[in-house]
Image (cartoon, rainbow, N blue to C red; front, side, top):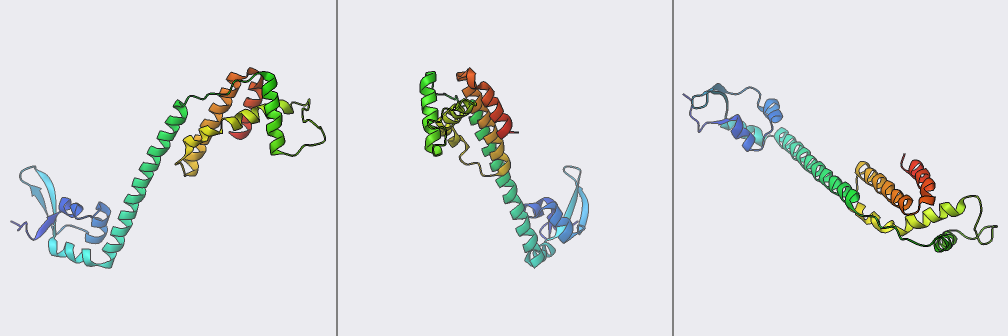
Length: 196
C-alpha cells in the first residue's frame, strides 16, 4: 500500500496548476498506477517530492507562463466574442428612424451638405441632372444617421467590427430606401459597392 502523503494524484497535480500536457511532458509516466477501490477507476500517483522538484525547475515556470497566457488569451477571446454578439444583437434590434422631409427640402439639404463637403464646381448651384442629386440625397441621409454608429463602440477586432459595420450599413440603407422609395436604387447600389 502506498502512503498518500508521499504521493499526489493526477487530479491533485491539476489542482496545483498543471495541465495534462505539462504532466505528460514534464512528469512523464506516473510513479504508481493502480485502481481506486471506492470508484473502480484507474489512479495515477506521482511522488510529491518529484512534483515539487519539477515545479522549481525553469521548464515548469516557462510552461506555466505559457499556459497562463493561453488561458488569458482564451478568456479574452470569449469576452470579445460575447461583446461582438451583444453589439450585433443591438444593431439588429435598434429601430432606425430616418428623418422624413418633403422632396424639395431634402434636395435643398442634400445640395447644401454636398457643398459643405466639397467646393462648388463648374455646375454653379450643383443641381446636376446626371443623378448626382439622388446620390447626394442618400449621402445626406446616411450622414444624418451617423449617430447609429455609436452602436459599434467597443468592437476592436477586424472581423467582428467589419461584420457589425456591414450589418449596420445594410440596415441604414434599407431604412433610407423604405422611407424614400425613389432612393431605393441608389441605396442598393451603395450596399453592393460598400458591403460586398
